Length: 377
Ligand code: SF4
Image (cartoon, rainbow, N blue to C red; front, top):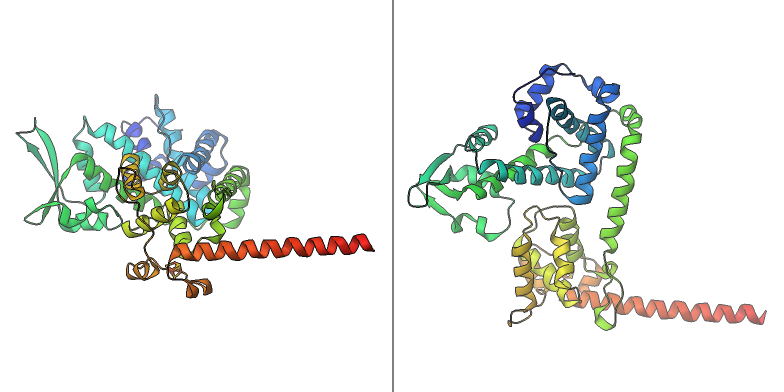
């Protein structure tokens, strides 16, 4: 086992830090040890748990660390989890895993940074961001984080909410002013990129095969999740409210696919998909559930936006934008031959349902006919 180390507890909670890989390197534990030695079985099992938690919960639990030995298990479980994710080699799993690690680090950082200013300094250095911490004397000494707008843009380009747009920020002499919590949210993006970097790793096939006892459960859970998302709650109801995802237009299917995979989706696409789903009869809660995978998911904000589009607060219910508008915003993707007959994504859906119903009826009458023939014979 590795020797006692003062920083072990800290880096075990943030295992993507450069200091964490340095610690592992200096400890002398080799990849071979991690994969085969009995003494590292706990680290391997915890590595598997990291991936399963990411899959099932969309976050990775931060355990209470009571000893250096426990910290080392936690620390070593991270590279092992990366190996497992790489062996499975599923792009969506890679994104979901990276996002879950980033989200749980963000939650931990929020806790830690309320009493520790050094962590802001540490993370800024880690990700090469120049920051100035400014105390606000009129606000009980609260701190503001100032960072150059170039760094701000570097890490916010994937954040779709309009509050992150540079025009909506306070900018002074090239510096953007942020609250501590906002800065940490930016750090979450940097962590996501760091965790995702190099994944999937190039793990030899034979090695992956030797780890099948760790990957098998994960593969099965991934499959269950894939089926669940593909069929989520779209049970048939009456009339136009039939919810059949296989009849969704390509544009809506693509946006839903991105949301499911944790890809940041532009505001215009979120609006389109929300309006579409509301119009075919999904409830606000069902729609919020779909957004839970989004990297910047905020339940309160999402609920507000969904209710606004639904017209729940006495306003008008919005409808999905037309195909022309979808094209203007770059949201018309994967159009097919049915698209040529419609000018609106809802018309696409209606038409598909109609064709399906017709085909279903024809199928039934053919079956009835052949049953009759059989009987006559
Ligand atoms: S043509 Fe219309 S329905 Fe088809 S993908 Fe584009 S926006 Fe969607």
